[in-house]
Image (tube, rainbow, N blue to C red):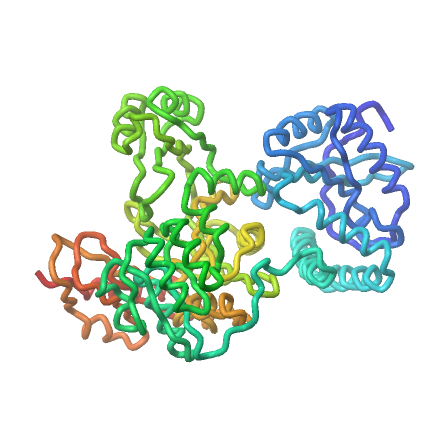
Length: 581
């Protein structure tokens, strides 16, 4: 090899070739070069070419594991050798980069993929475990080879489509193998399935709990809930309401004693209360998922540690640190309270340096309490993926929705997510990447239940995680009429230890929120007859006794053959509704 052996990456269609033993030589030499550029870097030969006798593309896949703050230094060292950063809409995020190159060896050009993975992700351990299994088990190796040959033979003639099919279709074989080999573990909180007649306890009695309670009732389960309001939305559906604040440990302990399993319908439950409820019954999705997502700073650290991309952020205390963050991150930026707030609350947009002090003051940060400073993303679309993880550890995702927010409050969601100006291959890559994000997050949280990952699609095609919600979500309400299994039933299936249901859509779907208007007053909805004149409109009203400006009061859903038509019909029905004075 020459002194700088890494050449520009040679993009090729996916093929299936006999294993080339020279790939091992290339891997060893590149490991030596990378260690010389960044001493102490341990490089592993992974992927198909690391398994003697396993055919494939004969690409040389290399794996490196590092702490998040070490990853940029490794990338810098690799690029100094000639590796190139990925470009295009299907690239890996900078928090878990993939570097590319081509090497000439023995008269042949070998493509090289250098995967740099955060230690907290656990991905390298899976790759090494799968490598060991393939080396030891000839039957597994031959089955994997046959699967790859099948994918290549059946793929479209377009090289881009062939590569996409090869990459993602073989992932199904790998995932199934990882579970079968025990390299992907089921949840720590496994438990036995709970039969109808068991009692489900809910921390929170709002509209999300109400819709889950409808599903629980249909399945034959009892329902109890903790809420400070005796007339909360769950009250007409629950067997009993335990009165108490969301941080009331004694009330939560009583709820747990009444329940066979406990879940939460909002992530702003006190951790001590959640622990108290767990004394009496299993808590699912789990305390870890709750702790990681109810604090924005903890959530950002968790995402950084597992290699998922977020907007650039900093923890700041006081005005001077906030000004430093503004200079470093750029303006406009967002300042957010770590705890509390959703639907756009507890955050301030900072447009210029003159507004920093007022923003810190508005969030109560003048006393030095920590705040999250976050760069504002110039996004093309807001997306979300609703993912469920069952007792066997496998995940399943609903079709991706495209969302529109109004001043931080979700206004409407459309499924399948339309990607204006992008071809079908690009749209498919984005969809698969979003599902992959949901899968990794759910598994790293050791989730049992349903969760939602809110995403930005930036102008370059990169997916950026905005927020996590370890629960059912507003953007998944369309699943009640639009999918074979609603998100609410799916969550119950998971926490009850039952098999997950199908997520197949019934067609295109649109959901629009019904928000309150005007001052605080008794809630009386008018125009229902006109809204339901379209027989395909489904109206859900949450049973809240009082209405006020921008309060979530209900939603409407339409399922159609066409997403645009579904959205137009849902908007027309919403326009017919109003709140009486």
